[in-house]
Length: 319
Image 1 (tube, rainbow, N blue to C red):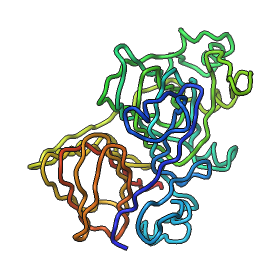
Image 2 (spheres, rainbow, N blue to C red; image 1 turned 120 degrees about the horizontal axis):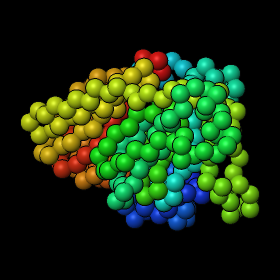
Image 3 (cartoon, rainbow, N blue to C red; image 1 turned 30 degrees about the horizontal axis):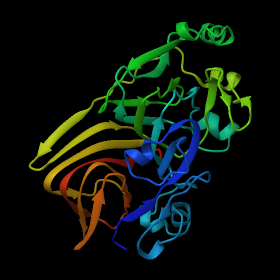
Image 4 (cartoon, rainbow, N blue to C red; image 1 turned 90 degrees about the vertical axis):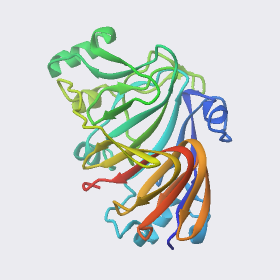
């Protein structure tokens, strides 16, 4: 094949969503309460569709199942990664995700370790990230007594920040924040607090999962120790944010023409700013903000030209 797979995203409306996926990224969205763009997804709850090449019109899930050679003959029942853009007009629910073992036993899917690159943040915006409980009993008591101000940890953020969110971390994206999220391909979320909101579609509060949240939360919370590195070579600057068993995530900044070489079986790429061109095997593809694609196994090198910023992810050894 030796050509990238460009993908059509899948959109989800959310109680906390807004319209910035349209106003900032130019997507055609279902409503002004659109919270999530599933940009590179093979998950059964919202798969991306291939826009070009021999697999045009097929879902990424179908390509994964039928053409594993595209992904370097990778193993596993499901495509392991999921790239999203989230627009939080309001706070998301305070939640926590299970690890692989718990998720497999109780949900029949992968666990959910994820990370966020902050695309935009209003003045004074913050994430809910971690908690202050020192023991499981203290955690349970704070949840049962709704001592949220005591329990929850708030972390101010700005555009360009990066947060790694391992399974077991209590978290929520705060009001006024947009992120690009790289995660394991899982849709399992345990809510422990939803600000007592009423879902206008149902007239009810959304379901909580208090016992599951207590079961899977890491206590006490510890911030991951990240070794973020940045290297500049000529016209490109590469920042490596994280490299784990689940995924590695990078920021590519290009001003001019830059050559890249394959470092993994396949690479997920999202253009988050600017415009330019991608050249693979003598063919040129236009790039602009909001474009998402996969560089498959038979693409050994590629050139990116222009003035643009991209977020790239590769699968980890565990996946």
